[in-house]
Image (cartoon, rainbow, N blue to C red; front, side, top):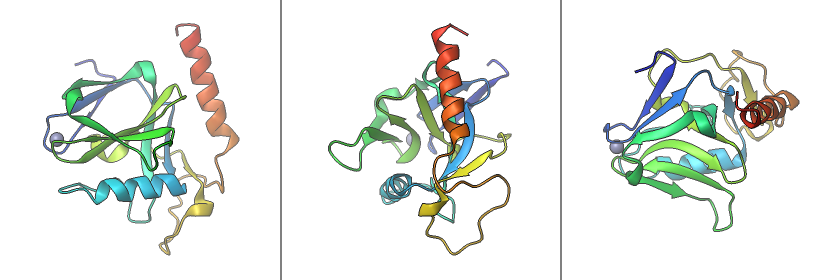
Length: 167
Ligand SMILES: [Zn+2]
């Protein structure tokens, strides 16, 4: 295995994804959909947590061309919060591990941080904290933003540019 490949595995080991290089961003999201989607997954039989104790969801976000399921892809099931929701949360149906989320029109995949083995990159930002419901103290490990910050969109935009020119 290449040294800059990070592996994300379901808890029973049948589904295995690989991410190449450093993520576009390592962030925690507190938006209402991520919280609701996380609870939806955690309510499945045998599921392990995807949310942090304070309701945040930590993700490693990768370009579409740098993240792939290399084993057990046929076991993935996409969950939506509503029939017309543009976002699907993919769960390994063997053991109900939340693996990653895919926003339909996006060029990125946000993979649940909890499924990766250490060492992991530090958290770089905490987003949508306006929607945070927890009374636990907000971790001070990274800047926190009420909404989605410009720097997040800038990272996604830069990643798209790099993809388009084949870098
Ligand atoms: Zn599994």
